[in-house]
Image 1 (cartoon, rainbow, N blue to C red):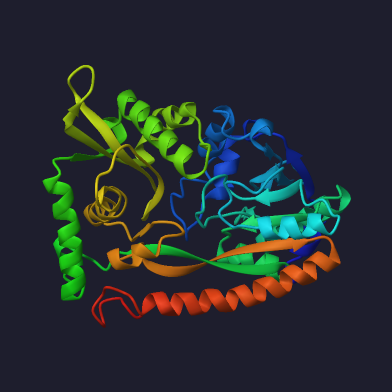
Image 2 (cartoon, rainbow, N blue to C red):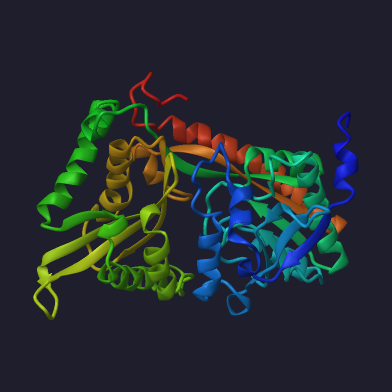
Length: 407
């Protein structure tokens, strides 16, 4: 480069940190800051540390921290990536179990593998985090991409996976020949709505009536809903939410990723980023005569986005999931003038409630050439299917034409 920054990158040193606590929080957060993802809660040092300190992440859970770091000649942290040595493919939301099964049937060993991501969090955000003030941020990203590949080859690992990267991170990875995989999530965009009624005004008449009917059914059930954030959160809310989350996880997946300690740490250390919607039923008093908590939806908030994360419930309450997870999130976003709500993957039912499909991305380096060719063929065909699915889903948009249904 004309400014000599390419010479500067030759003096950088790459290393691995076995725990996030070994790295300075201010240095990490300086790299994690992003104008495109302002206030992103999941790449913060505090969030990643809470996962480790609570026992949600670690050797016993199959998420062994191996955070990649890059330092300049003065020892200043100029690059970092949240990285884990994985012994399974759970908690990633970009499913590669089929690749693993095929490779192992052919006599290979797919695990362990390297994963660059935020555990249990399918949210796009910084992955190859480079200091924008350094002489060559793109050079730092290229160095990290090369280091990830070398780590897999040198340690005889099957693969490296970077899930939900930012566009600039994705460009660095695919530019180096990594496989580009596409997926689908559902996001709600705030088009300057004054309130929920104004938002519903953008729907077709039939779809608008359907949403109103669902919300009325929840109101008629007698269940009370509270939207809690910051100082409003108390220990009893976290105790109740963990019970609900744990019960739902047992029913759906067989085990819960996040520990009870994690949720209490979240309330103690990141309460201002938490938006917890809790539902209680006065008709079901507990042993002390108080309404029983019967549902809860956990969201985390950035500067302009609300991220829906976890849901838990007890009992059969029609449409309560939609009310707590989707409609209350939209109401909160409108009130706080947030730009969007990201409701995550899965669930075509989200489209009828105003959350439209968007493409998400991941990048993959496969060491074995034969497996790499097979996966490359798969993801190419999968990308075509994702594009077709999004087109079909957009045709089911509840918005009137011109009100966001055809973007």
